[in-house]
Image (cartoon, rainbow, N blue to C red; front, side, top):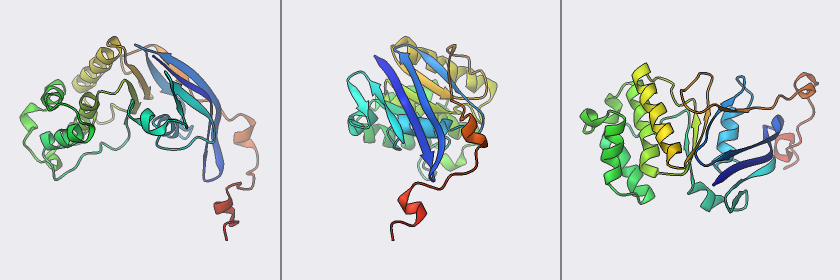
Length: 223
């Protein structure tokens, strides 16, 4: 398995965020996605998850490609974003059970994920009782329920204490040891992998005067 980005570019509100981003990760590899705030790390992860279009370029995963194989691609990739995607009215177990049902995953994965992230004693509690760190662990536990080969992680250890961060790092190492791939946007050393994907600088683009927006909707040409 190989996960490859090819000359990706991103625009938001008609403005160039990054361009010319290429990298390749092999099965069993974890990498840190590095770049300053505003460099487009979260946008890149959403593009690679098949949730947002690229302005240019594409990506490949084995025989699949973006943007061509969107639905099949999304079935191979899991995104853990800034939000924990936790239903506050559901129990902790109910959140993972709903996730398992949505993906057609065996129920046994729910108990395994609860145990791996130390959430067993909270399993029947409403999720809105959980602390920020507990909600983060619950959100990350979804990765084990969905069991996708590629994990895209956006600052995954925010709100986690040192012990929980160590558990998560071990989970990622186990995922990669089983042939998975992980790409994590982070400003800290997460304790797994030594590969780095660097967000490309915009160079002269960053200091150049703003150019007119080229999105027809934003420029009013839709009227």
